[in-house]
Image 1 (cartoon, rainbow, N blue to C red):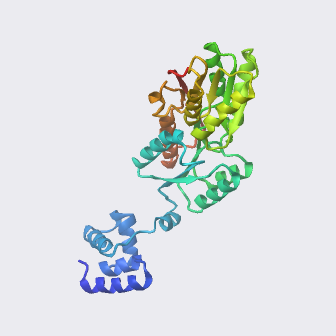
Image 2: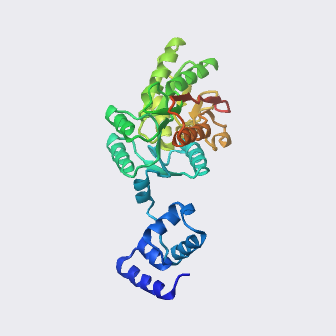
Image 3: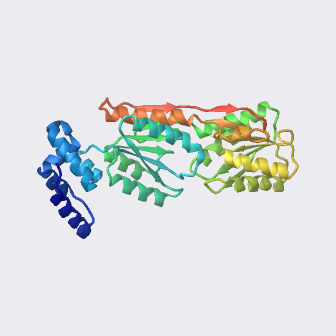
Length: 345
């Protein structure tokens, strides 16, 4: 039972220091500070009556355990750091939701960090998160730079790279090939009789892979060299509209556009309609991400489905298996993609 005198003393200290400590909880419960620590971190080590007294003291005081300090001392963090270039990127949301739900079901919480599209920001976020000793890292995209890769390996925590593909990940990888996706898009247009194809892509680290795959496939198919236009990441609806305007202003004809996101593709569709182009008769449009709005546009948007939920779930499973002490194993999995045909093609 927590006494009124102890509560009054605690309130006085809170006014002077602003923070309730584990010693305050111990005084309220009438036990030692180490007993409070055991009751909170490993309840089986103390009696039921002591646990109840500690819990009453915690509730009465409003004490919040310092989980970071606890993780540092025990080496057992329950936080998994997930790093994304931009939280606003809609195509990443299914991956992040599946990752969070799978981790949460096993008692881990996802800590989300935004790295931006430059190495300086990425380095800053990595250092900040490493200082908090997360249980694992899940990255959207491949980590570049041997210094960064070695830094994460030296941390000793599991790392899963996603949303890209390479044979030599930092640790584990669950993703897909942007080059293969762009090749498939070029073939898709060719199969539908399109001969003047174009690529509209955000200028992120994966843009070069998409460009290489698209140009290589066009050459193999005997098509004229595709037009390519890069826009600043993250891509927006406005940059999609401006991208199509650039293609049309350049002349030479464009009968199909492969966009690196559904947001870009929607911008292209709006600009095409504004210019009285018939879609798909005059211009075929293919996006990436198969976002919920894609099927509800008019005409409905054809898009590359990336299986983000499966990617996020599998990344979480890889992390959990490693944290559960299962033997270290090489994990390099290609989740692939599917082209969903709708009205714009």
